Image 1: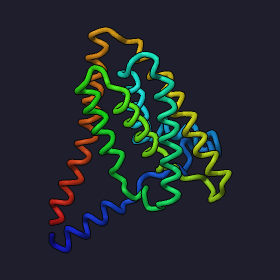
Image 2: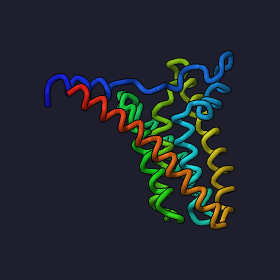
Image 3: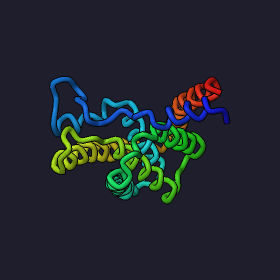
Length: 201
């Protein structure tokens, strides 16, 4: 691979992701800002929505397992980030996960427990890796993580439970279309990455 291509690849890999350390809404700071951030940050919102949709395609009664998977994924993701500080620099990881989740949603009318919980946990981990506290203190980090945990679990519980109640044929079709739409958005953005790499060659 030519030197220019390697430089372009390094730039893309090291391009920082949008961090969760700024004000979600101007004038709103602290815990309230962290609570709202996953709902106004498109990347995090899509990951959490896809997790709720996956929970909605699992068997009824699995919503609490899905919630625990999301929480465990977030805690594991943030723990891994603390051990490997450069993880947020892999900015396209959320796009890959969103593409996979969308394709699973589009391809299957019912999602089994193990792959479903795995995708939900992965969504939580990728979301948590992007969390950056307002201040470099343990209390600020705990507040940031708690805010995202609350937003994520509420969205998952409400959305996932509601979708689990939708058993109609048309409801299932609508959910599969939504999954295909999420996958298409992610793959379009990934295609732009490859186009940039090819152009740099």
